[in-house]
Length: 124
Figure 1 (cartoon, one colour):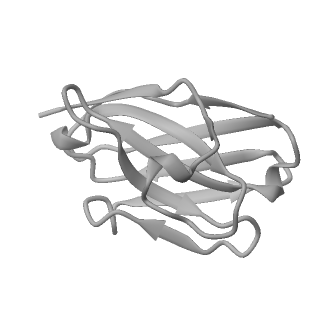
Figure 2: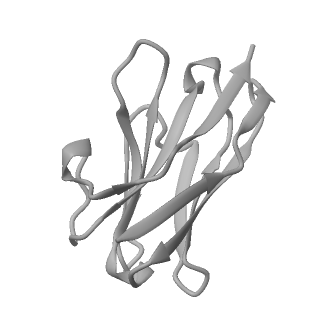
């Protein structure tokens, strides 16, 4: 089992930045690929970014590529999502997730563990 707790969400103006953190506990953190998804009101949950276990290989959705950066610190059992140049359409609940596998996917069904989510609101 892995427990994931997100933090760092909040209200920010368009063009601003936020950094989300995901603290993991339980099984060995470096054994999991980490990802972020988001869900806006009335919409399905969508893939945002993922990072491999130890090589630092990353994947991003087209909507955030170039603005968001996913990273991890295996010594702190924490994953991060740095969000820059935020837009109102980035408003959503952001979920941290972990996958017990090597390869990132954009399908939420492939991920094994989920946090409770943190709200990000971007005002225009």
